[in-house]
Length: 111
Image (tube, one colour):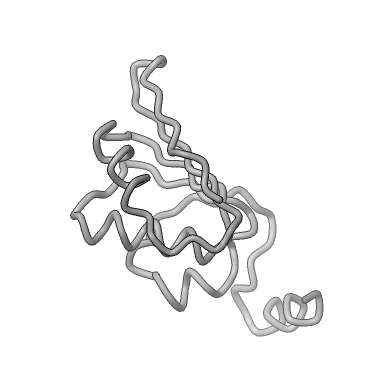
């Protein structure tokens, strides 16, 4: 399901991207690639459960990218509830997040 992590240092900074839209639960191979590249920036283009799984695997290995970027779909309660510590500081380009009671009601109604 997952594509191998793609890493590049063409810009002078190391960048890794990881995509998985399946139900992967073992992120060890992808974590190996990301850690070996010593990525400055890690972009995780995946659903919240994958974001948490990959973030937890990297934390387990004591690795933290300097910048972590996620998809808009990751701006949900899952990362806040299941991997708050690992997702701390993540940048998610979005214009909406259910951060108060009214926003949570709107979000719940949309699902």
